[in-house]
Structures are given as structure tokens and as C-alpha cells.
Image (spheres, rainbow, N blue to C red):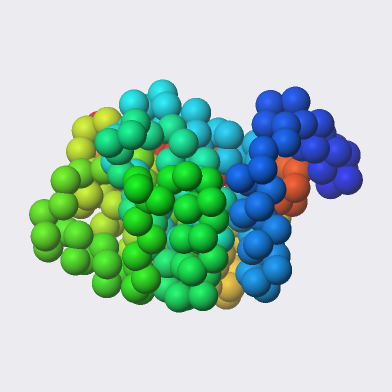
Length: 221
């Protein structure tokens, strides 16, 4: 299937299963207006995160990498009113856009956007013995993916679902000789997910609005 065909199929599926939603349209528009890179999850991927959170019965969600809050809104909608989503963002301007979008979606009471280097905040959560999370979504700088996964495991319990975004990278993930830090980090995190005895994991290719990419999913056992 060509990339153009994949894009068209993704558009069709998004119209069918997501449709028009002012909160998501606003989040994308304000992110673009603020100059944020157009790298948020697609509509169909956002709906998948929502369904995964619902299937897990999540009450606590951790997101590593906020951007403009698009994926946070999807996952937060799956939470009960007493649930919580903590999203970590290193860029204060991105965080400000995300907070505005989350508030406009009516979710400010259950979404906390924390501005800090993710590894520092993760270390703080581990040190503070934070209650384990039910779903952890890793979608930040790919070079640090293995470190994020190690911390995610420390903040998990049996039944926690860990999702890692952008693991195919237009097919470059199969290049064992790549010197690209993002590819190196992605290959390392996939190897960890495959070999870690506490995880049952798989990865899927995707083709559509995000090009040729994919998601990895792991269940803590």
C-alpha cells in the first residue's frame, strides 16, 4: 500500500470512528498556531489510547511527553472523575498550550501537566513512592526511551499497560548500523521490552497520517 493510500485510509477511519470533535480540533489548531511541531498522535491512535485506558479500567495514567495535550485529552476522557493523569513536559511553552487545551476540554481537574525534564520527575515519583500507574504512555525524546522504560517499570504493578510511540520510524528501526540516536534508543527499548521477564510485549506497524511508524505495547505481569 502506498503512503498516499495509507493516508486516505486513515482519514476514512478517523471520520468513521472519531468524527468531528471541537476539543481535539481546538487542541490541534492552538498547537499549530503556537508553532508546536505536528507530531501528536493521529486521531485513530488517540482513540486507541482511549480504548486501552477504558479496557484497563485505568484510574491513574502517566504520560511522558505532553506536546499540546492532544493525547492527554484522549486518555483523560477514559478516566473516572476521581482519576488522575500526570503528563511530563520539558518545554514550558508546550506545557502552557497543553494546559489551555486541557482546560478547554473540561479536564483540568484530572490532568496535571508537570514542567521538568522527564527523567528528573520520574526519579522524584519513584523516590516519593508514588502509587503505581495503570497506563503509562511514553512519547518523548526517543534517545531516552530505555531510561523511561526502566522508570516506568518502577512505577508499575502487575496489570500496568505500557505503550511506546514511534517505534518503526519509517522503517529505520531495522537498521542495526544506524547512528541516529532516535533509532538507537528505539531499538534498545524494543529489545528491553522483548527480553524483560516482567513484560509481555508486542509492536505494530502503522501507516497513515503519521507516515510509516508504529506502537509497542507491553503488559506488566
